[in-house]
Image 1 (tube, rainbow over the protein chains, first blue to last red):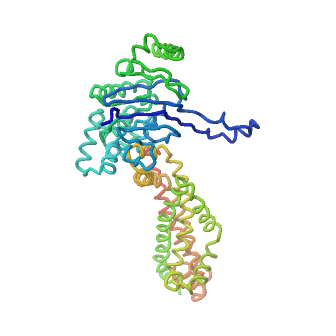
Image 2: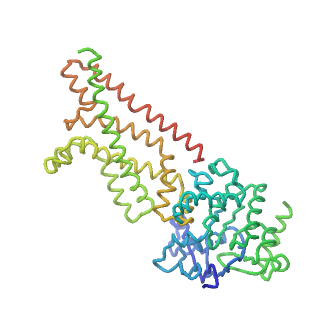
Image 3: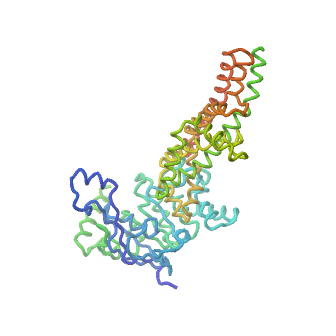
Length: 270
Length: 217
């Protein structure tokens, strides 16, 4: 057995800006394209054990989401290795679809399947990926919806739900197939402030049940209560790692100190 | 010959006009849908789709019909020698080229995020296309498909050039001679064409809008 549920080893991901060509022409700069390239992930390594709850935070645009997508192989890293248990996902020839079935992913902008009801959204992977019989898939989907307390939305379409309900269905969709780990990409930041609470409560429930989670989030009270480890991420790198107490009392790096000051002031003002 | 007799003769051409159009429409779906996805998601071979679209959208179907029927018909009597086959083939592939463009726009409208969400739950690319993209793409395309269907009904009139199919237009032209009446057959067929196109296009559009509203597209 591998020691880790998921592991990233020296992962790099760079992508060119979409308007690279235009900028180039406008600048009249033809020397090199380097400045038009975003280095979202630069030599990032991370290990997650079963039952771990880790939280990544840092300024927007620093590459947190790209890193999370790399872990789920929704973005393919340029360099480095991603392991899911014993399996190296970055090796050529790996069945990524099978691997992704073992990774739950929750999106910032939710991305529920718009043509399916909440139940349909959760059922799809159970039926088409796990190939469960109809009855069993339905039972498990309903159980997942109940777990995140949106049973009353089962037959509603995403457009008919509130943001908080939709995101909880999104969590149920990720949860229903019992993945080895759930990756959550700013699950509350696209929601109205008064709706974040219900999603945070859901995450607290999952944490209590020992779900392995890697969460990108700036919900600091939640981080303090739930995270075992916080990871400060900036400019494509992990700058500082430590328990919440370290970040809330005295971060080691100036950059983290600055960021914490700003974010805590913002939270208390609200 | 009175108007009623003419009407009956023309009405008898309606099933054939409808079946040419509907079969072509279905061929258009079968060809256009995969081609649209190839164009968006398999960029390396997208040029094949491009070439196909340019050929079938760039050449008037009357030319295509004559070319396939009289050009290839003698060599392939069981296929292009058959008027219905040639009509459905030409109109179907032309429609496929149009529909491919309609679906391509719809794929963009549905958005890549839906694909990514589909892959995040463990579906392969083509299974995500099947289970997640296609149902939404159809909803998104209804008004375009309504126009395309209307176009096919109208363009089925060109089929008269290859003869052999007694559809609406062919009958109207024959009536012009046999009934020695230049106007009535064309007025009646004009009305019939409107009846064949308008309600279905209208219904498709309305159904699509309702559905779009429901799923928030």
